[in-house]
Image 1 (cartoon, rainbow over the protein chains, first blue to last red):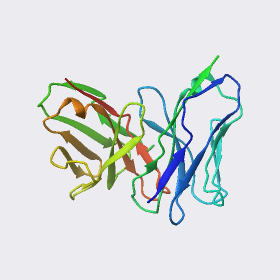
Image 2: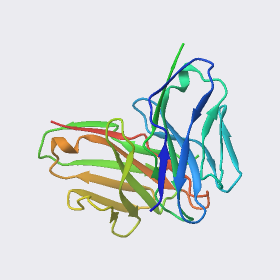
Image 3: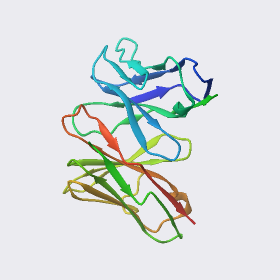
Image 4: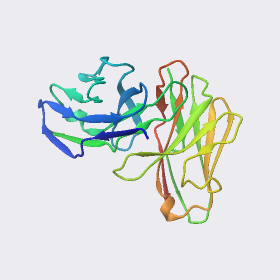
Length: 113
Length: 116
């Protein structure tokens, strides 16, 4: 079945460091891909998305490119801030229509000043 | 736009009681809503898919008689945890799909349930 694998955390970085959180997926067809962020005690917020191969999603300095050849959707940010500390979830939607998302296990990021 | 609310945001109850959690799409109609459960430091686990006007579809291993889902209108789905026990303590999150938005789902802020 469809699945998402993302790097295990926790990831601890100093402020202004470069961030990469790896995400790979397994799916039939052409899924849409998402990154969600969850701040402490809150629900999930959509960070960025890509709906087809080679699309790049970007938001708040974060980027991820839909790579069909490597079935990957790695999240990157050039310079992290303390306020980026959160749990990041990679997810896919396997097909069109009202289908539930398949989530990775989440990666906890801690940014220290 | 596309805001989903949940109520209550947290609840503490005694073992054996029932708790109802509401999920509302505030500015759009959602024919489908999803209920997830999140254990501490873990990912979201899909519990059920809720379709307006029909019975919910439960994932394998989720007891439908324990987790009652009602989707009575296009903007409201409810999850009732019946005869709650401490092992039901968890973070419950709903989401709603917005048709025509490339499968994007909008999540509620979650409800933290603690059963004593």
